[in-house]
Amino acid sequence: MSLNKKIINGSVWSLIGNVGYQLSGLFIFILLSRMLSPVDFGTAALAIVFVELTKVLVSFGLDQIVIRASANEEDEIQNNVFFSSLLLGLLTSVLFILNAEYLEAVFEAPGLAISLYILSVVPIMQSLTSVPNGILRRLFKFKALAFRLLISSLISGAVAIYLAYNGYGFYSLIIQKIIVVTLELFLVWKSVKWRPNFKINSIKIISTFKQGKPIVLTSLIGQGIFRFVELLIGYFLGVAALGVFKIAGKLLDAIVQFTIKPIVDVSFSAFAKLKDSPDKLNECYLNFISTCALFSFPAFFGSLVIGPEMVSLIFGEQWQKSGAVFSILCLSGISASLNYFFSQFCHATHNSHIPFRIRIFEFFAVISLVSIFSQVSIYHVAYSIVAVATIICITMMAILRQKFLFSLTEIFNGLFSSFISSLCMAAVVYFTVKIQLGSQPSIIKVVISIILGGATYIIFYKLLFPQKIKNIIVKIKKIRA
Image (cartoon, rainbow, N blue to C red; front, side, top):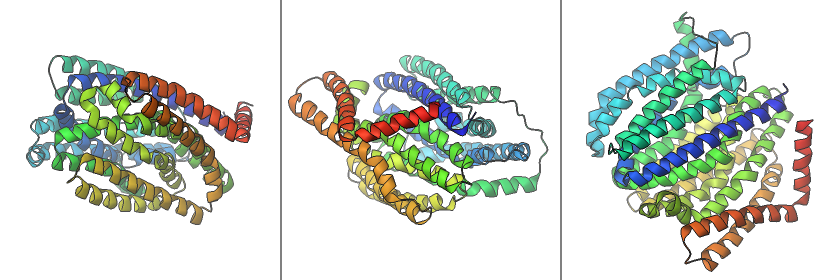
């Protein structure tokens, strides 16, 4: 199968997996949000923050080392990665147990310690998925990954709903996390034939850690930005405010998963295959970001306009504050559509030091601003996140031009049509929904916004950029041929 077909097939299955996972996960999340209070959500979120942080540490960028391994050394690399990751998982689980009670006292969150004790098994299970995940991604077997996501989401969600309905509170979310990781571990190993041979070479393991260091530090700082934001919100504004932020973040993440993540999941594998062909690599990058913008821009612009109505309709009136926070965070959508691909591009071309340095700056900028504005309100926190994301996006564009010789004109041309069409669409939706339908129920506003927004986006795109439509059709025909 050609690389183009692998990319398309991988993107399709990644999209199916993410859509199925997000739809089922969002539906489950909605039901749970109507059964649990902001305090329950905040307490569980606080515990899971630590799990998400350690997930990056445990993987240590090792799955990406597996992806870019050459055929003649893949077995040895996979074996080294397996034991390296397992060692990290064991150490992290011990840290969970030793620090649980201390963290509960610091955050003044009753139930946090027992939650961390329960979750202490998660880092070990996560460490065991690094190699099979890398193998499946290297072979473009995104169908297996999609199946794993969907099954684990449905089963764990059903259990969580049952527990929440029977009054288990935030424990229902903690147990849901345990079940998800357990099922993912079982299903991902079932999808690969490779098994470790237990030939441990300490020198090679140290070498493996050195290869993964820049990748994991970049990822850890990137994940840490949002996780530390949640920690700061929980510390300064309380677990209820953290629950409000978590609801807004969940809806924003759903948009990212539907419009950006399926393409990003495939991009690293594609960049790695083309890393020795600069012209094709640059063209591939431009195609990725322009295709992503085609779907992500209208989603973010539309959500910016009707964010409060969406949150009230989906999660209930008790989460109204989350609606305003969600709308603010959607301002970062344009930056997100570009930023997600930059790190993948750099890692695939062995330039991991670049996103690492950017992430360090981003980390300190976000943490500093959030530490200040969390003293004011949750809305100021959201605005500070958007401001930093915009600065980082501009920085990345400058690096692409100077380091990788990209033409910024070509980048802007690839994004301009989606941006203008989305902006026009948002204006129409705002005028119709906010001004003409101001007193109508949320469900009417949301339904009309979706129908009107989709139709006007297509109309504006076709009227303003007819040549773009022709080019998209030509590309699709070439890929099919």
